[in-house]
Length: 337
Image (cartoon, rainbow, N blue to C red; front, side, top):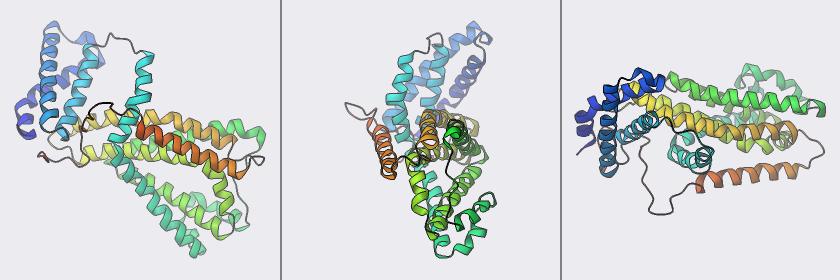
């Protein structure tokens, strides 16, 4: 059976199951005994459809939607099960790394939207520093005179570092959630958030390098920057997932496609937040410390990055035969097999 044939044959049942699931998620008492029986029947049918879809077209968007639908229905039917610590631990050790790998194409696109403008702006300002006054965002141009005096703004007094660390963590989380939530604009604002922040980092790097303080800037940035930028790229990828679901819902209703994408996007973002907290602590206490060697700061940045990406790419892998992914980056109406 083809994906579109399965969708057309079972669409009404899936819509009914989605509707009952939404009611159950809001208030379980709103479901009548008859609807409870219907929910069970539709759930069993959907699990059967999912098994067939995973066998015949595991990479199709319909399979991804079914996987999300069955998961949501399961959480309603078995909602009396308590959320146990071991389930959170399983997500941290297995679920989150798998989700990162599954959604990696979106994260890579977000990273490119940041890195390419950063490189272009950095090179342009390094070779023509006068362009900084119109290439850098207005909010950053107040730093230009300081840099021209071969000084930096990154030194944080010791007594202010606990407050600075808290502020930095909140700001990083705010930027990440902004990149994620902007996906609701069909991804357009997410694209802008990534480009805007790339312009800032690239422009400041180019200008400080021209005036001979680029090394000092990156001595400050490197300790926390690997983790911080990695999470911002994930947040941007989460926003792009939402935007892609809006622009290309495939066979599903746009609302259903967005719901399916949001399930993964929210988990990806929330799973990455602890890394932002760690990056904020490094930025508040280690990065500005004059009594800490630059080589130690670079070691912290490189080691934290290696450990983080080893965790993301190696944790949660199947010990037996690997399962193929259930969603595709560029889903089409027809199966690609």
